[in-house]
Length: 248
Image (cartoon, rainbow, N blue to C red):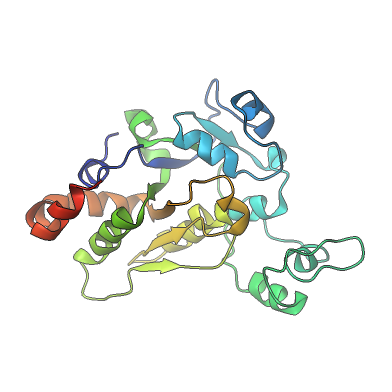
């Protein structure tokens, strides 16, 4: 499936489709160990698998193979279990090195308590370039992720507000990198007026990404609405965007 938006904002790589499915794709990459031959760092984080999808691979994740606790939550495989994570994300304790993402364990507990409760209804979460999604896979696409620079992010943020009277149709929330492209976006999919989500601001995720890119993710239904608006919007009719597009 080709994206009109991707063409007009001159993305160098296709948007990434995040699919919920019970079908395991053949020859899909499932672990960071498989990426070692490409020179990628081995650890429990699933962002290297997302990067692999950015670079043209199909990657597949399931609860049993995701070793990162935050990754299991961010991918909607299950909720956090307290006793470790609140210390890991804050100031630590004996035997747990803290990452100081929140000031205190109590703040982490409150943060976790307020996370949306979503569990994917399928065994697998698959990530692949949108332009590799076949017609028989379209119904499995749940989220579309654009990887963008500042100019392209401004275009998407404007397009996300193009067909609505309000000015709050793009959000950026604290959370894990994978949560910003799955959990937070699936939460928006529940809404009658889903917002676009700016993501991959997570410090852990940033080390795998180029310095000048962020993600903007939308539920698939909202993606289709935005696609349909391209030719009536500033992206094709406005002079300012045409000037900016020349430098991309």
